[in-house]
Image (cartoon, rainbow, N blue to C red; front, side, top):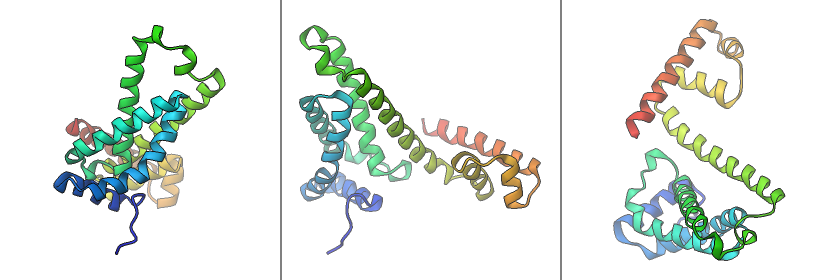
Length: 193
């Protein structure tokens, strides 16, 4: 038997494929055991309320079961897809709770200011991570020269001059590759919308 685990992106994608094709309860159970604790930790940080966190976990995993056929491995990892579902459900829960504030105390919904700031940092980090994973899929579709320029500048934080020096090419070539790569990324993103 394989020692692959759901944290391996390829294995998680195969589990989602089995759920979509065969409604495999074993595959779903394996995904649930891996992602439910992570989703609960994420949701607990967001809401500061254990029950609301559990609601988010259940709704997210129900969506994973029902919508597994919509997962596209070429657009991102299973983890990215699952956490995007969770994030959307989080927004729905916040929207619903906004209209029911008189039923709930503010402490039930919103953490204290210090925790809220920490939560915003966590949200930003998760959103940034999801964005970077999604952009990586598009970057992989760029010509090699453009992809390398983008990675060195935007991922590694090098200046265009540093890239020119490292690749031993003219600065103008780096600028052209960067401009063309950004243009191509925009086209790829808009074509997938």
